[in-house]
Length: 379
Ligand SMILES: [Zn+2]
Ligand SMILES: [Zn+2]
Ligand SMILES: [Zn+2]
Figure 1: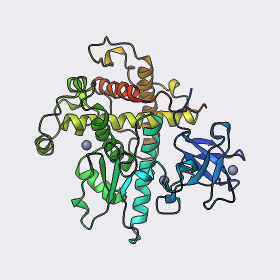
Figure 2: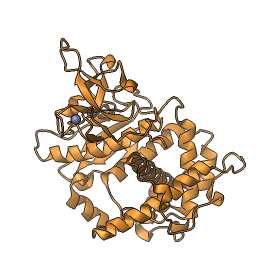
Figure 3: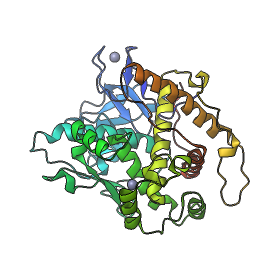
C-alpha cells in the first residue's frame, strides 16, 4: 500500500526520522520536508559558494533538487519545510509560510509559542492539501484573485477575534493556541473536540467550497445532499446558538454544529474527511495493519454511497474500505485513549447519512486532484 505523505522515513544513518523533525537526533544531519515530494528526508550541504546555505536531499526521487530552508526556520514557527532554490532568492518562505498575510507581533515574547503551535497545525493541513492535489497558492504573492491567505491574529481582546473564512482569507484567533483558553471555549460551547488543526481544516473547507465547488457541476448535487446554502447564514447561526442543533443531526451530520447551515455542514464534513485521510495515511506509513482491526459495528456497505448528476451509484469499494478502516482504527484508538485516562481519540459516531456526505467530499476532491500529483511515496 502506498502513502500519500511520507511522514516517517530513515535518515542516511538509518535512524528513523519524522515529519516534524529538523535534525537527526542520532547523527546530527539536517532534515527537511519537501512538500512537492511529500517526504521528510535527511540533507547534505549544497554548493558552498552560494550566498545562502543550500541543501540536497538523499534519494533518487529528489536527485537534482537544490533547496534552501524556509526563512521561518529560525523564527518562532521553526518551520522545517524546504524551498526550491530554483524558485529564486526572493522566495524566502515555503509553500505553507507564504500563505500568511498577517502574523503575530514578534516583539511580544508570549506570541512566539502561540504562533509556533498554529504553524504546526497549518503545516499538517497544507501538506495534506498539496498531496491531495488541491490548488494551494498564496493570495499574498502567487494568486491574488483566487489564492488562500491566513491572518493569524492576536488582540488585546481575544474574544473580539473570530476564527473564520471570508473571500480566501482564513482568520485564526491565535489565542486559541493556549490550551486553557481553548479548553474553556470548548466547554462553554459544549463541543467534544476543539483543536487548532480542526479549525484550520474546517476553514479550508469553506475556502475550497468557494474556490472549486461554487457554480461548478457539483453545486446542484451539493444542495441536494447538504441543503440550500442560500438560506440566510446569520439567521441560521443565531437559531443554532439559541435553540441548539437540528433534532436529527446525528443521522445526517458529522457533528452537531454541522446542522447549523449547509456551509457549516460542508466545512465540518470536509474537516472530518481530512482527519481521516491524514490519520489513516499515518497508520499506513507506520505499518499499522488497520484493515485487520475488528469493527465494533457492521461495516458500511454500498447503501451509504452518494450519487451525482443522476449517475448510477457505482460501487466505490476504495471509499468503503477507507471508511471501514477508519471505523476500525478509531475504535481501537478510543480504547487506547481510555486506557490512558484521556478523552476519546475520535469522539464522534459516524452515521450512514454522515458517511454519504463524506463520500461526496471524497469524490469531489478526487475529481479536482491533479493526476500528476501526489508522488505517492512507496512504503
Ligand atoms: Zn541520522
Ligand atoms: Zn515555512
Ligand atoms: Zn465554519
